[in-house]
Every structure is written in structure tokens, then in C-alpha cells.
Length: 233
Image (cartoon, rainbow, N blue to C red; front, side, top):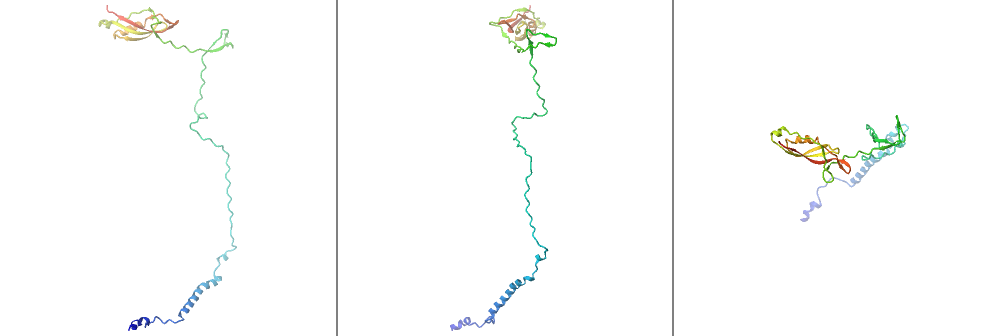
């Protein structure tokens, strides 16, 4: 009974095809003949293939020689220019600027105790001597100590203003006067003022004159105080 169970497997009743023993070798041989025909026949028929290079007349290869390099252009030798320095002083005079005019000659005087001038001819023995600069004006000094008060040599009485008389105004006007080296009054300044009497006092003192004040034998200007008194009668 068990043998019958596996009988269908060990001895199948159905067969696939009707293949014989010579089927496989024959198939391999036929395939080899077909492959050989496909590969070998074109190789044997190379004489039949066209040859395009045979149709070209006198075929040749043109060899073009390489172009030689061009020589560099010849340039004129130019010396190198130094770099411009903006802080350097210019060496070329700018245009549009006039040259400086020479300084005027110094003022000289011709003196020679033995020289003579005849007409337009000048004695060649003359010597040019530059005049010394003028002395600076002497500053005024105040009266006092070794500087004595100058003496008045010309007097002028002040005119009493009518308005001051009507207002019954009197008193003393004190002025600071600068007396020049020649004794004349050169400058006045009011130290104590009476408005209605100041101008009359200034007008009178400007007319006064004094003796020159000497200092070390040289007349000098001095500064002194002057009092002008107005008294009602």
C-alpha cells in the first residue's frame, strides 16, 4: 500500500515531449554553423567592401610648419622718471607769475670833506655812507625827583561860560597835560571834571607854553598835572 502511494511520483504516467538522444547534439551543431556563417562570411568578403581612400587622387598629408614667434617691438630707450613727490619743492617756475622786483637802494648821503662837485661831475673820491635810522621819539617822563617842573612862560585865562555863571557853578578842573620837548602842550586829559567848565579849561591850557625840561642835558617831554580854577565874583 505505501508503494502505491508514491508510485505516481517515481513512475509518472505523463511524459514531456518526444525528445530523442540526438536532439541536443544536433541543436548545438546547427547553432555553431549559424554563428560561424555570421562571423566568418563577412571576414572573407572584405574584397567586396568599398575602399573610399582609393577614390582620392594623389592623397598626401600637408605638414604646416609652426609659425616662428614674432620678435618684441623695438622701443626707444626712455630713462626712468623719478616718482613725483607732492611735498617736494617745485623746480620749474610756474607760468603767469612775474619775477620779484629788486629792492630799492638804501638812502645814502655823499660826504667827503675834501670832495668837490662841479656841474654834473662828481668827485670819484666821494664815499657812500648810509644814514643812521632816525632816533625813536623820547617817551614823556613824569615830573618829580630829578625831573623838575617846567616854568610857564605864556598864560591864557579861561573864558567863564555864561551858562555856568547863570547856574552859579564854580570850582576847579584838574587836567593831565603832556608838555613837549619844545615846551608846548601836546595832549590833555581830564582827571576831575565839571561838565559846564571842562571845555573852557581845555581851551585855555592848550594856549599855555613852558620852558623845555632838560634831562641829562637833553630836552624831553614831560607829564604834569594842571589845575584850572573858576571863581564867581
